[in-house]
Structures are given as C-alpha cells and as structure tokens.
Amino acid sequence: MVVITLQRNKCIGCNYCVEVAPNQFQMSKKDGKSVLLHSTEKKGFYTIKSFDESIFDSTMEAKKACPVKIIQVKQV
Image (tube, rainbow, N blue to C red; front, side, top):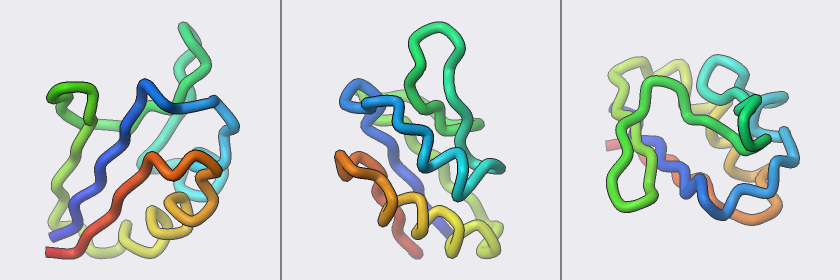
C-alpha cells in the first residue's frame, strides 16, 4: 500500500507536483495551491491510501521536486 500525505496549508503553488504526478495532484483554481486527489483531510493534512503500487514512483518524484517539502510518501 502507498500512503501519500500533503500539508496543503504550506503549499506555495509552484505546480511541480502536478507536472510530475498529474494523476495524484492538481492545482486549485480557488487559491492556487496543490490538491491531493481523492484524499481525506484531518488537521490540515490531506492523506490518501492506495493499493495501486504504480503511483509510488511518480509521487516520490513529486516529493523530491517540492521546494517546501510538504509531501510525504510511504510504502506500507
């Protein structure tokens, strides 16, 4: 299982995560910040748990590309 977490309130809207992993992220038209698709929010952290292991590599690239380091990716 792949667990992805986004700390959205610290997002600066650079769009790198969307460029690297467009199936997991998109930019909000309302505030210009990243949105983790199909995630649930708890205390400012947006999380998705997926059994699709194929998303791991692209989300790891998004994590590395993020200049404010607000994306966490784990394989469980």
